[in-house]
Image (cartoon, chains in turn blue, red):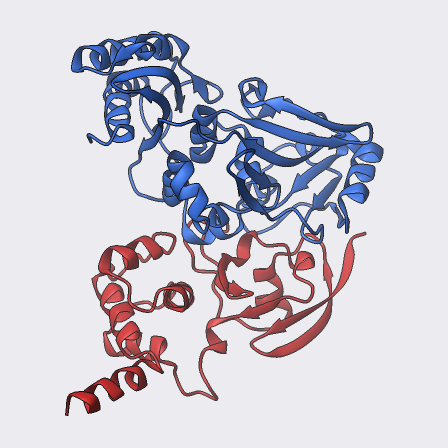
Length: 293
Length: 170
């Protein structure tokens, strides 16, 4: 295959969620689901082995009612399966209440890709480098799947199984992401390292901290490009919880990072570099979240 | 189903055609409709040479399946000019000599069109952020950024908006 031509496949174009679910129930694992297509199209073009090729591609283009980004102060944020990364940037609620996600969306790929790539697609791609994935992991939330039997919600902590693999079953359609409303005193931030702005990250990190006065009472830290999937750094979080975020505490948290990650050498960076800068990037991201960057 | 009947509204004109489902919008524009003004660069959504507007939004046509574009309004760089008369963005690229080999230019112009439609007065940082998905291998971008600034200054309607203020001062 080349970057020019796509392999042969049958295209399924359901007009509704029930029709899409029915197609998945019938053809299951032989379908590749596509929303924005910015990942699926590239994967199709470069599929090396015929065995990897899907028999069907199912585009959600003509399925109405999935392109929403809706915020409710009591229920949180709902992001539909067809909401694009650009749609997040258009939402003042995302900018105000989920700043880390907004910052990740702002640097995500390029303008053209942001206009078509979906937020759920970024999660479902299950790449360890996904910028929105990293931010969402630190916020916490659930992904809702629709199957013939009904709706199933999976906690983001249980969403990624391995590289490229999620908790979605072949007969399920991912319909929405739900993020909880931020509690009072919540601060979040996202940072990443890349060579050029449109590159995939060589390292990304997101934090969500709940502060009570000077004390951090709850912390979620997610890091990307340091394991087969996005990673939650629970030992690092433990270094922050229940403490005032002094320079010494941040130093200990940064030192804990290297023990939790398993980076590799690849074309974007080296394991050694990633191990060295991961703690520094975490410290800067925490400072950014607390407004002392 | 391996073929689909679709209607594309390209640059204000409806084109009804049958497309094979694994053809991209770029393939259909260039190979089936002969609209070669939109360029094939990388094929993976990184270089921006194939940028067109779909319903006013800049997208990579190399990553868009034509069969999913039924009924959509599509604008290519040829759709900006009016019977051969360049629009203000195209003219600004010529005036600022923001073109060397010219291959990236259609994509650059279309991304600029989408930027200025949302933000008529972008800062240099905003221009560079907007063009991050368009790669040029000749100019070094300086002249392209100047061209976008000039396009913003010469946008139709802008002069009219400024004129009454001048009169008020007099």
